[in-house]
Image (tube, rainbow, N blue to C red):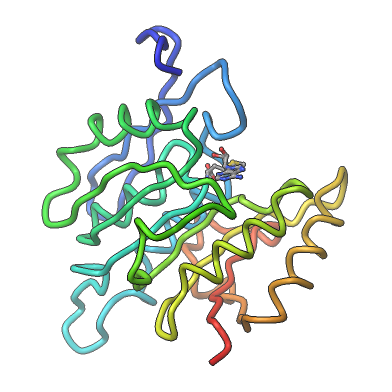
Length: 221
Ligand SMILES: C[S@@+](CC[C@H](N)C(=O)[O-])C[C@H]1O[C@@H](n2cnc3c(N)ncnc32)[C@H](O)[C@@H]1O
């Protein structure tokens, strides 16, 4: 990743409701995190919906919130939260750090009241750098391979306090290994967490789909 040249990037643009545009550089070469996945777009656009607006003032509830994104890939979800005023740490494996930095730099004009930094967080490893627990943990398309299920749930446990809200967006895939992985993930999650699905009506109507699900997950007290 460190040797990527300008020409090896291709850009995905996501227009915000305020007219600003997030520009995500993606790589032709590299692992799955080098491109923007549909679940990330659905989640990013959900962050702009009425669910996160104060009904009395119309103000945006992301302002000043502490947000941690797991498996951030290009960083689109975290960048959206930061552009809405949150203080965000986007995390992923070491290999994705250059791309995350590039995208943070590319979008710094869109992040004014909020802030965003990128750090390495490998699921299952030490999370002390990320404590106390954030207000929100965001994750898009992170449920996709068997070996990651145990460490991913372990990280969620260590990172969530009684008031942390985990917003998990994932694509329900009916072919390949994903159905099994999805079942394993929820079986394990059930031991320490409860969750509710976000109805389609509460999502952005242009950026939602029956296959892509958003859950609000909370730690059992
Ligand atoms: C399918 S991609 C999704 C990327 C981004 N969230 C999106 O939706 O566009 C899964 C992401 O999880 C990250 N990932 C996979 N295994 C991981 C692990 N053990 N620890 C931390 N991140 C991991 C990958 O590097 C990748 O960025």
